[in-house]
Image 1 (tube, rainbow, N blue to C red):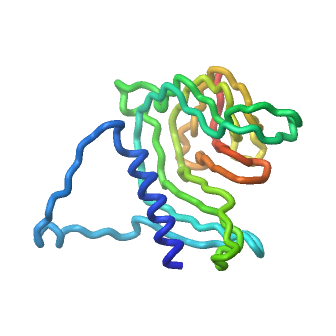
Image 2: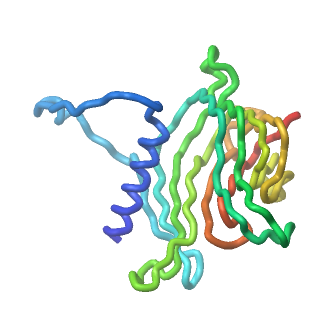
Length: 222
């Protein structure tokens, strides 16, 4: 158990640092005296569990009480360039699972109320034979947020994943390498405060093999 916790903690810490730090920045360590240290404490910041999915598969889950607001512009986001069999295309060529260009996360950089909001960050790692170090195999890694609100606009030249506008498990968009064109994905468009989530996974097999993005309770316009 300790080994798994340390491994997941290091993965999560590296991912959080990569997401939160700017492209360039400077930092240095500072010593804290005893009075400063005595005023620092944390409780309930994170939760770690290992849950059995079936007889051979388990999922290690780390959840963090982290809420973020952001406005971000990304020129190009590309993930998963490969030549894999797709049941929709038995003779595929190399291509991207995710190819998003001119990406804007949030609506208006001059108005902080339109920032893209995330609540309840989580990381998951799915293993087979998790208790046997000789046969243990990592099957997928997923990160996301339990609740998201706001807009993501991009040229979705390739989108692999699902977008469900009502969180009823019947997504309106569902597939591999879909060319959606220039669209805006709006998470929790009615600002209800519940039901809208986001995740991005990387899996080595299954229907969602490769990089896969999921939005629940989100609309796509135009």
